[in-house]
Structures are given as C-alpha cells and as structure tokens.
Length: 392
Image 1 (tube, rainbow, N blue to C red):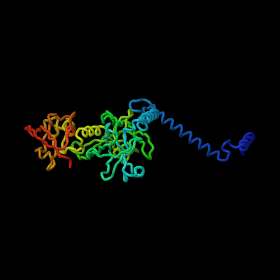
Image 2 (cartoon, rainbow, N blue to C red; image 1 turned 45 degrees about the vertical axis):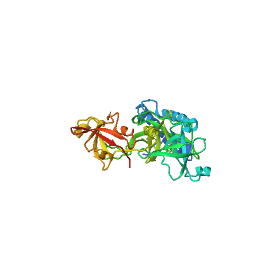
Image 3 (cartoon, rainbow, N blue to C red; image 1 turned 120 degrees about the vertical axis):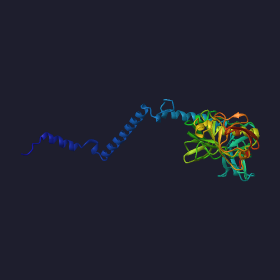
Image 4 (cartoon, one colour; image 1 turned 135 degrees about the horizontal axis):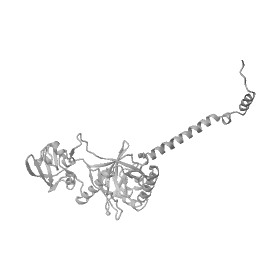
C-alpha cells in the first residue's frame, strides 16, 4: 500500500524550497552564520571566565591587599607612575642624572658625542659639589664627558671604583645640581613591590617609563653551603622580573620618585640592580675616606645569629658572633693568628649579632686599619689585633 502524502504538506514543502532557507540560501551565508556563532561563543566564554576569576578572588584580579580589580588598578598605577616620574625625566629633577659619553676627539665634541658608540650609561649626582656615582665601568684610557640636561658637556674625573660593589665615583665640574634622593624601604620589604624603570632623555633617545616587579635579592657570592659566608664579595643586589629597557646606570625609582637602585645589567629575562643601601653606604665611605678600597680579611665564616639552630649544630655555646670556617694562607686573618673553629664575638668593643654583622663592621674601615677582635677558642677567650689588608 502506497503511503499517503497530504497535498498540503507537498505544497508547504515546495513553498519552503522555493523561498530557500533564509540566510543559508545566500552566497556565503552558512560560513557567515558559523563565524558569528564562533565569535559570540568566544566572547561569552571569556566574559564567563573573567567573571569566575573575579568573584572567586583570583590573584590575577587582586592588587596586594587592595580589592580593586587588577585591570583598573593596573591602569591607575601605570598612570600614577608615569605622571610622577615625568618630573624626573623632563623637569628640574633631571639634573640629578648625568649622561656619560666616551669622547675620542676632545677638539670636536659635537661629533664625538653623536657617535653611535659614544654613550656609556648614566650617573647619579650624589652631592651638590659635583660627585656622582655610576654602575658603568668607565674606560681609563679614553676621555669621558658628562652631559647634564641642557648644560654644556664637562670632562669627568674618575675618583675611584669598587670592584666589590661595582660602583664608580666620578667628579663633574658642575655646581648646585639637584641630587638623587634615596628610598628608605628595607630591601626585604621591596620584594614583590612594583618599581619604575626610567628611560632618561639623552641624545638620540626617547624618554619613557615602564613598570617591573622586584622578585628577589641575590649576592655575587656562590657558595655550595648557603650558610657559609665570605668576608669578600657579599654585596647584595635586587632582581627585577623583566629585562629593563633602561640604559646601564639608569635609576630604578619608587612611586615617590626615590631611588631604589641603579641598573647594573640585564640577562635571561631578569635585571640586576645595585640597591640604594649599597650606593648610600659606599657613598658615605667615599666621602669620609675619599677612597673605595675594600678591606681584606681572608676568611669564611658562619654567622651564628642567622639561625638559633646553628650553635647546636656546631656544638658551640655562643649564640652570637661568627664561627670561622676557613682561613686563607698569608691573609690578614692568618697573620692575626685566627684559626678555623674560632668564634669572633665582638670587634672594637661592638658585639656581633643580628643587628651588627661582621660585614657591617668591615664597611666602617679601610685597608691598613687595625681592629680588635674578641675571640672564643674552646674554653679560652682571646683578644687579637687584626690589621686589615687591601683586597687583592
């Protein structure tokens, strides 16, 4: 028996076929609908994901303890930084920073300063009578000139360089310049904070500001045992989690326009910054002694005050001071008769503890100074004269 087909159904089917299926009947209609659907789905998915992250308290949307959405607070922070730092880049505070140039021909300064490889980096004015500091290792066999804002170029007098800190002090023949102001934030509190990378105005460059995060603190010293220290090569530096576009020696500033540090070098996606503490301590020492010569002792040690478990581990009764691990041959430490296993408890009458470390004491002295060490050797207590040498 043949199936019965309603004439009405046939008629409607034919009408539908004659009209087509709307947009699908147009040339390219089907791909257009599919494309719109995909885009709409992606937008809806993104909105949903962002909403979920926002209301679930995702770190992506949080700015520290501030509950303001990161997207908006990030824009505000960037604008705040750029607005604040613009005074450093363009206005009067720019005279606190000097551009350093290698000059081949002093008779033609214009040509020499414009050479592609002439620019060396930046220095920061430390005193109003012309002393400045830089992380740039300046050549000793070629003249170096400093250019301060719109002032005429001035020849630089290299005063001294500290290999331990990587800082060079110079004298610029300028008076009454602005000086860089330091941050007062302890280094440990800077970790996780955002700082401004400043690209200062100089010949052939465009000034600008970007933001990076302090991701840690490091030291030049590489020890297999992290608790063993050396009297040499322990200067700390800050690590930024970005390769700074700023020139070497350029300042890293906080939102209050204070110097957090100075760019030393960038590599592998991070940037090493000489911190404000090192710059300030080195400056104080230089101004007092007019030299950056580092005192040399020649020993490695363990600071007992770093961990309450250390005295028990080493089977000693002293809770503070430094436990001598090794003494270098023909070093000032050996000449003073210090031995491995000795515990230096005080220097010049100052007790060594977490507030005053052995490194802090050494930074107060220069080569040739004599310091008096109070030493515990077994059951004996000794007083030894240590004549500081110069770091070889």
